[in-house]
Length: 150
View 1 (cartoon, helix red, strand yellow):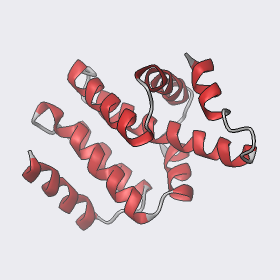
View 2 (tube, one colour):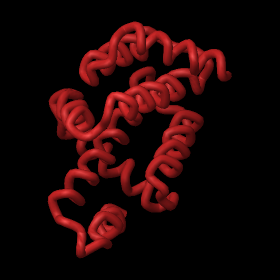
View 3 (cartoon, helix red, strand yellow):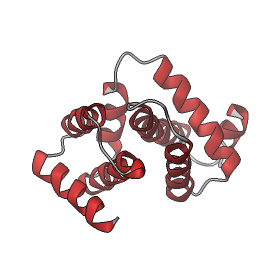
């Protein structure tokens, strides 16, 4: 499946290679944050996984097979990472503030898939808001927005 994902990102040979690599790195970073959020409260429920897959499929216009490959790649990167900074750095370099706010909103959706937030999820959301340079006020406003839309 990883080969399928690589072929997807390398499909446009006329595109500058470094831009494609940066796009792939960004997509893997976003997916890694979703996986980390889904797993933080152990176990990663089927409901959380399906929600993450839905977000990834819609956001990046991927087939289920490519989304599964992306999750495998992001999982591999998470396993080999020391912390989440490497993923946040990539997102900070490529995302506008508006896109980062949308990402935080989607992460809140993952938190509340099961209808509640535990202390691990609260900790991770606060940590990610700092890493992604999102103010506490913005973080809370997005949380309330997600809660009101449920």
